[in-house]
Image 1: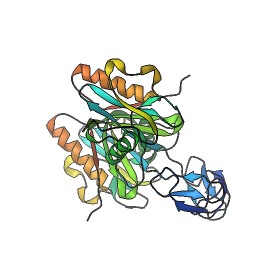
Image 2 (image 1 turned 180 degrees about the vertical axis):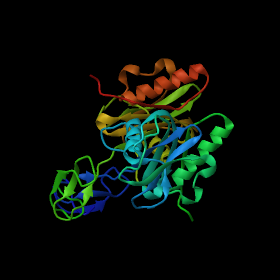
Image 3 (image 1 turned 30 degrees about the vertical axis):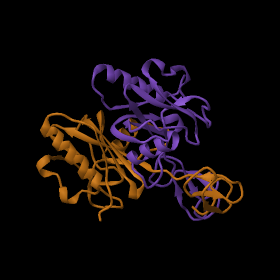
Image 4 (image 1 turned 90 degrees about the vertical axis):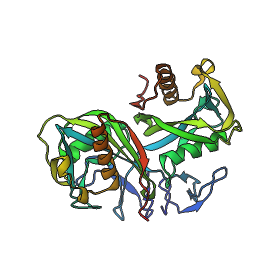
Length: 178
Length: 178
């Protein structure tokens, strides 16, 4: 951020009185512009013993496989975001089951949140940001071609819980690879 | 948003190609500036059968009671935010137990997330944004003077789970009062 979104004057990075972190502060109107992490919301959609994956048509990780997910929009709930993203990326209709994972990714300022969901029909197909959309049984999951560690972590929890016969909720974090 | 934070030129509200929602787009450099919901993270900190509440020294809801909570910062995890906010608002040291509630508040573009936590000592006290900090047993909770519905909802789930003898995770939403 170089300029004040409110008045257009240059901003400087300084710690406001009573705060303990540097913020972008407008040199003219004095507005303080905070930066906050973003939420990426998606679905782990099941059909029998298969899970719906999308192959990315966009960067980053073009060509790799992901659970349908994307940035939460203002004015919606987490649940609405999960349903919307699944429709946009996979043209798939789902009924949400339970919240399943919440993984902080602090080095990219994101929190990734996934619902488990039941796929309602087989009329899915790639949206604008997907190359292809496919149902994968566990033994066919393309583990070496998954787009993000939040995806592999969520799928690992899913198969582990399924083996144990009971689905939990998984909070955690993905730290930078050393 | 009136001006481009990148280059300072005026922005206009329009739907970019391939998108389906209006965004702030720079009239000069073409940058698209997305707006996303913010996360408010806090703790339900327990000591014996009492819960730690803070009385707000800031607007909105000056003078009303809340669980210690605040906006998640970039570069931190949800768990780190919960511990930090509890230290800042209540000068209280906690050990997190489990993630307890996640409540979307779409009309203010926020998602409120609370951990259950164990208070580690009784050396707490008001931080800069609190008038007072106090442990409340269930029968003393100031239900009529709670600051936000995410607080009353989280406390209701907590006492209900405690009565049932087992703590779950609660995802939901708070909609505008009609």
